[in-house]
Length: 63
Image (cartoon, one colour):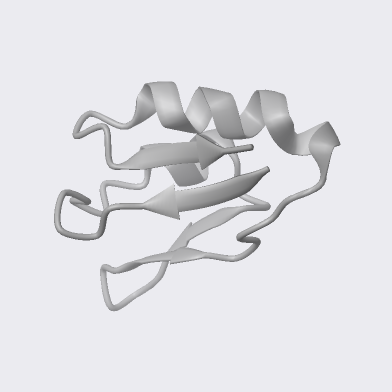
């Protein structure tokens, strides 16, 4: 699984970070950082929750 973020759509509202803090982080500069572009399969439920939580649909999963 690979995480893809459309940074043109991303508002860095941190809802993805709330769902999967191991994978996403919004730092003090108010930008989203993907900590693991290819997270372990056991994180899939959290990553899928982050994808669903994104109000701009900026996050996707590529298998």
